Length: 195
Image (tube, rainbow, N blue to C red):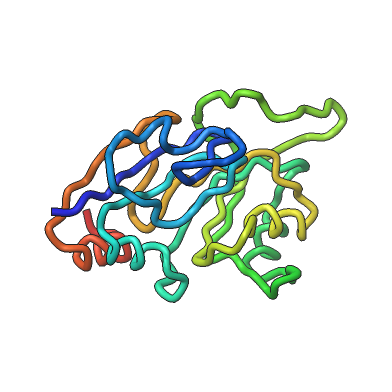
């Protein structure tokens, strides 16, 4: 029976188990042996990560050809509006090629999330706002580069959902384990949004 770990990665934690530079890693939070990250989340990003002990499931989740959707809550500098979201869904040009969101919407009330330590930098003369953005790629710092391309630098980035798995009430550093008999069935449930 394989394991799928749903983990809320804290800010400034590497999405790996070792680091030669002494930075915080997954090893400080995940004591389950022989599990591996199914995809990555930047050091300065927070939120949902999946890990598994099943190599096939790891590949199914992380391989770009499967286009597994990932949803992010993004706090940006400036006031995001419908036009920004339309531009993100139409596509923006990045140095490594065009990128577009599958879905984007402004969030009128900030999502109920934990306090970040350290907090984001606040500028009294510049407003900030939140958007919810869904992509099905995972290029390096893609969401940050996309929001910057439409004039909304990212201040805070939280991955809220991968496929049908949501962050839910997990606090930073918390995890839950899902047991599965079949990697392909687990992956199909992730894709199709079945419970």
